[in-house]
Length: 467
Image (cartoon, rainbow, N blue to C red; front, side, top):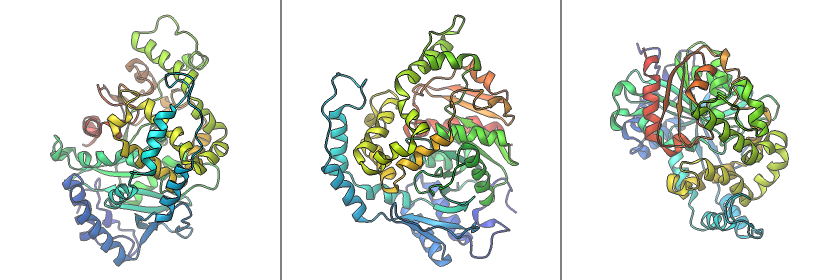
């Protein structure tokens, strides 16, 4: 009998006949993904596709008008692949070519927003040399699935390690990111022996798309905020057969992981976050008002105070728009690829580390992959509504009720994060904090920017919970 902490995907005793792919084919495909560090993905895809066809449980996403969904109450797990029509991509190129550009900014820096020359260069490549089919093939080479939870289809990537006793890990992305943030980390997480780790460091990795993002369904009712999403993740992990697991997140993913920890479902061993809400209650008002730091703060606390005060004073307008008027901003994000590019690229530009050099860190094609994913799924408005639902201060420990969390908490501080959480604040925010580390590389998009370092942090942070 398998260790109940790492059940095989096909071993759900309660699953109806024909629900899951055959055990041998599924394990062969997902083990190849983990073993190869994504090097044998084409073979894995072919095996998975053959299994899905035989089982008759396959969903194909063909664009923003795709209405294919499970019948209400259908909790089956369907194989998933992407096939965006050429017409959708041709329309994108035509819109880019017909852009009516504004005049140039009147400053010599980015204080008025993304500079005209920068965005014109990005969009010129997007409309001419960029090839979406490469990332589409890359995603289709991963084991992707979709299942309905609480009335909404949830898209997720699920890669099992070839190593026994791998620890199940659910990772949540943020905005303006997507599941693409995590793809490079799959190999280091599932096959640590190929990336400087040990077999006992391995993870089974589950990467879902938040409802309203990517290939997950777009909610049509209120209530799909962090708490409901966290509950859905617990349903997902248990539907996959996992009885014990850990959760990780940055940006929105941190908020979802915190919510999951507060809910403390059976089987959740602990969480790791890389954008922790640690600001003490007595400092929130001063930060929001742009006040000078109060006397008595330690140097790292003073730096955090000043960084957040500058962020809320000069760089948080995007969030205010989505929190208050997601539908209004959505018209531009869904109709104009240049508007979408400017709105998302600005934050990618600012939040990678070092700031202002995202192409050097991520690569231009990787940035365009993310922009195109938002475009072809038409999720500019739907993703913004998550801010409306999460109308809260994501950096305030009181607003996020962190002191209510009793499961073990791990935190890694990356130097280019929106703010560097001081250890003193973090210990106060999370009474159950057991791991805190500051690293020297990476920014807000830690998994995307530094996948090897991120994986190494996951191994260290969750090692005490494996027993």
